Amino acid sequence: MPLGKRISPSLPRAQRNEVPQEKRGGREAASPEELASSISFQTQNPLYSFDDMILNRDTVDAIQDVLSLYEKQSLLFDRWGLGETHKLQKQGGINLYGPSGTGKTMAAHAIAHQLGRKLLPVSYAQIESKYVGETAKNLTAMFRFARETKALLFFDEADALLSRRVTNMSNSTDVSVNQTRSVLLLLGEFDDLVLFATNFLSNYDPAFLRRILAHIRFDLSDEDSRAKLWQRYIPPQMPTDADIPLLARTFAGITGADIANAVFSAALRAARRDESFVRHAYFEDAIRRVVRSREDHAELGTLTERRTVSEEYVKNQLGGLPK
Amino acid sequence: MIAIAVILLLTAAMIQGLIVFWRNIVGWIKKAVKKIKEALGLMVDGTRTFILQTAQGLKNRSKYYYKNQATREWEEVVYTKSVEESEVPPEILAKVRKTMAGTEVSTTEELKLAIGA
Image 1 (cartoon, each protein chain N blue to C red):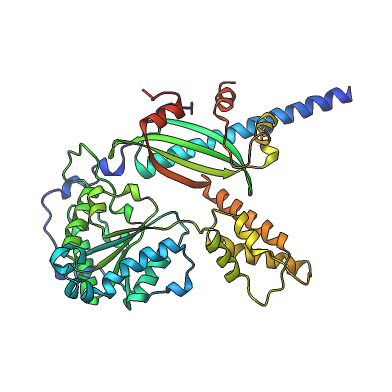
Image 2 (image 1 turned 90 degrees about the horizontal axis):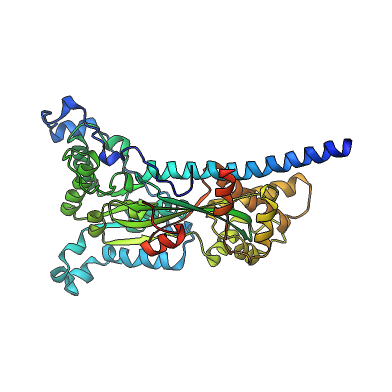
């Protein structure tokens, strides 16, 4: 591909009409009873608590601030009077966003654990339907199920369901628009916490972003958190000369799973060589291999950044704006 | 005679190595453009490539620019990928060596030349 050349994509999903012709307009809605019987939602007990997680300090603070809203509702809304001035703040959702491998899904479980609730992970395969109106009905049934079971709704990779509405949209039956609109309406009527997680905050519909109570950023571990992760994954009984501060300082941009894999791999090498302890160098080799294999697996390497930039910046980078 | 054959073979291997380096980058760019097109439904308007030395070794970096039609704002997506030192053309490696670790060295012009060649 020549550099700087404009590439024409096929129409994005949001612009395609995915509604079968014969189904438009005329299909009768299934009754709530029919829906309830046709879809089986499943709650699950939280698999993790915050004790299981090592998160950056800012992320922990942000989560705990928002959770105080649900743990101290009576104090905030009754005694301190926020019920009068901030009526809509009682409803809404928490959106966890950041790169993959940073603990967003674990955090959703930990939030449910802290609130003493079960989790209701949303299965898009169950919810999404190519037929007009069906997705909205499935979503309605799911919100109702969450209300009845008092489970926390959790939309993982939520941008798949709540993508941006495309400007100049002329097709009122567009599937993604309807999905987003349905969730927004249901959220407005839902008097409980809903959890969302995404890798790409900017994929969300702006209207949805406005309805969210708190957006909590998850970053790859900072040096302090990486040191704690190395400490956690190297068992205390393992003989080693590992310099944990050095490992934490040298290898950035890695996840807890990468560190766990590297520790295991380094131990295997020392065992294979019948050595009496696991050398520091083995951890370094192992984490390099882990990162490399993850990148190879990803093919595209690591998505380091996605950000909004000024037109001037693009001009400077490309030596002018593309025509 | 043997010496000439060895020199020719080494030259061919070196040229082949250079071709592989740039071909890999072109393949990488194509995949990223496709990914952006599929995942975001957006058209990439331009690309730049870099190489840099990090504590974890040499990294290729590619940057993609496009106008998000929903927000009408420009966005930049950056992918980073490890590269073996032995795969990097000597003149590019020399540039990296002269630069501080962590500083991006542009390879865009060299890539344009390689593609044009």
